[in-house]
Image (tube, helix red, strand yellow):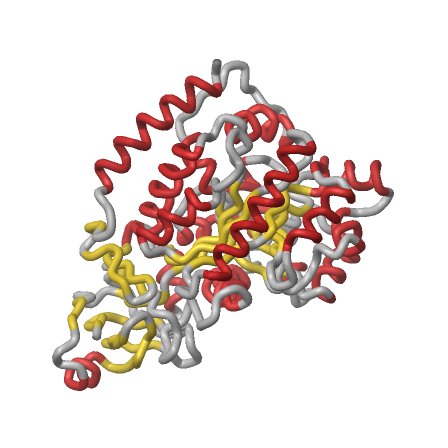
Length: 442
């Protein structure tokens, strides 16, 4: 038994706030949530984690990540001066992923998952690309996730951009990993069929993906991120992207449509009717200058809309802050998205995860997975269940996290990583990244 208590507990259930509460954990599941006094008396023999008056809340979920981008931090590519999104892809990301080795993949995954733990992120939906070496590359991400104790849903980015052979290898890597994850009874891994974006995928390729996906897996695809993607679809197929994906059978309740910056009202209707999930990535959209996604309209349409980082950061609370202001700025209206953004992060990301994992995530209740974080936030104004999102928005970031527990296992305690030698891994990362940079610029 494990007891986390003596702090303000945010359960994410209706009326679920305890001024001085506790969470009891039995194995990998939450057994009970209640007042600190009651549970401390009820479970006197439990291992105890003292929140010291901080905040106890569910582990955070990142609904769209790019672990493979980690080694781009600080990278300078000769002659790289992009003027648009396509030049960013061709000049940076595709040049990088063509050089990624299995060692680069492995160490990138260690580094990102460690940073996730430090920022209180316990579940990650990752979209991978490493066209230098495709076979078994997803294992190089899954193995660190398993070792470090982070929950992960993984896929490989299928694309026609590097030719038929590479495309087929990518599809088969997804198929292989989907089967591996299905055989893993820990419910810590899940697999999907990853797709890059419509403009790098022919109808023939999409059909090939469908043949190898399996009936239960979903698709994870970038949709209408830049206007060039829309233009390409109209020019080649005389239809918009979502319509084309609908006709190809890509949409559905287990499909993650990432970005959807440039979708029309008719496309939103198709997304809603097919129960397709959408993930907003505000920092990436701003950094790539592709536009601001129509979050208020998507929300109004009743689409399940989550929040991701697109590899820009591993701090979901940072993305929460940016998402809160980008739409106010874009629409010139300070009154928008006050409720939509926290709903995306704290409720909808959990609903997205529920379509892939067997027990509840993102909530502190009996029977849910014991994914729990503690922050050392000390509110300077009254804090309760009605205003806790405001306290998180304006008072916290990921580095307020002191303890991270996933699946009942303590991964970090008092800001000390318990599951890896961080200094050694970071040393290896720097050496591996330096070698990658030399190859990128050779």
